[in-house]
Structure formats: C-alpha cells, structure tokens
Length: 129
Image (cartoon, rainbow, N blue to C red; front, side):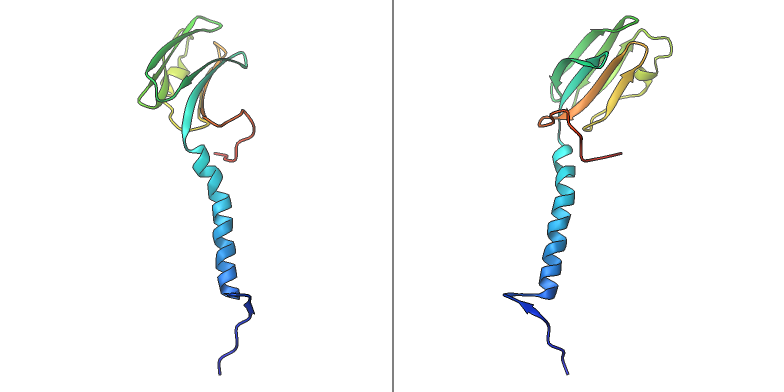
C-alpha cells in the first residue's frame, strides 16, 4: 500500500523542500556573483584614498610614497607595482592582482592598492578568503 503524501496547496512537501533549497542557494551565491566583477582600482596613501581608476583602463601611475616614487601599472584588467624605491621590493615581487578585494601593499612607502567592485561603498564585503 502506498502512503499518502502530505499536500500543501498545489505543492507536495518534497516540492517545497526543493524550492527552499534553491532559494537558500541563490541567497548564498548572490554575493559571490556580485563581488566577482571587479570595477575599479583604489590607491591609498596613509589609509586615505588618493586616486581611483577603472580596472579596464590602461594606465601607468606614479605615486609619491614615504621613501620615494611607487609605479603602479593597470593593464589587461590587472594591477601590479612595477617600480618601487623601497629596499626589499616585496610589493613588486607580489605580482599582479585582478579579483575584487585583492590588495598590493608597500609598507615602507605606506601605499595600498585595492581592487573593488563598482558598487562597493567601502563597507563590509560578503566574502572572506
């Protein structure tokens, strides 16, 4: 004998469970989709934003840091520090970044380069790495 399934309106119980799982998945995935579209490069000196550039532009920027000039290159949707005057040049060897919320930091020059989404207002992001 078959056991009767509970029905709620037009849906069976299993239908509602699947629907709730799909909705929960969409809520979880939405911040990932939104934040995966990098839009701009923000450059900070001493924790103060000093310049913003579109990530899809081709720019070579020279910023005055604590120890001298820091050269930042934006090309092909990536950002990298290509020239720097600090002694160890760790920031230069870090390579290029291209995803939202990635950062390049030159500690001796007090320069921070960050990629943000176009809609980002500087608040708390929904992704942790």
